[in-house]
Image 1 (cartoon, one colour):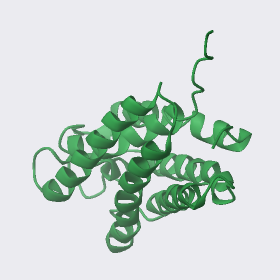
Image 2: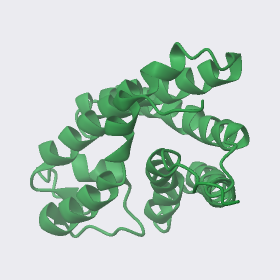
Image 3: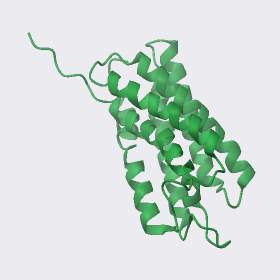
Image 4: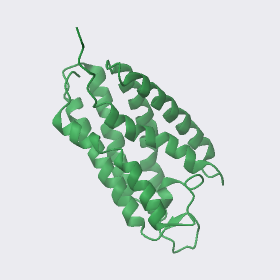
Length: 199
């Protein structure tokens, strides 16, 4: 993909702001919330049960899931119609699928719809690492490819660790962020143009 579609640039360029939003939401609304141990989804739950690691404004995090997921899917649309090759279309389909299911994660909070929430989250953790690794391998921009490889490695390790630590009392939040945050960074980083060549 030699040029970046304006839709993709707009929708993916803001993705790192998800990290900022999540941190601010956790600090502002999290109740006994631990970024290391509590899952991101816990910020979308209410505190009616008295459980720790909840939020007194869960709808704010769920809105963030929906907004950033929708933008991720929207930014992938031009790739679905890419003429650069089938591989680019597959990458677009993976990013779009993960974005759509991220929206559904926000629509079905884990405290009120635990089964649906888990079912909606699973494709996100499957599609995004694959999309990231494939996207990095296709990226011919030497300025961002090494960084992409590092992000892909962190994402893969985080995803595997999160699967192992889910339900454990310690470390699940940190592992989940290692799985999710590199995605948000890459979606903006891949938009960067390489510097012009000098003669």
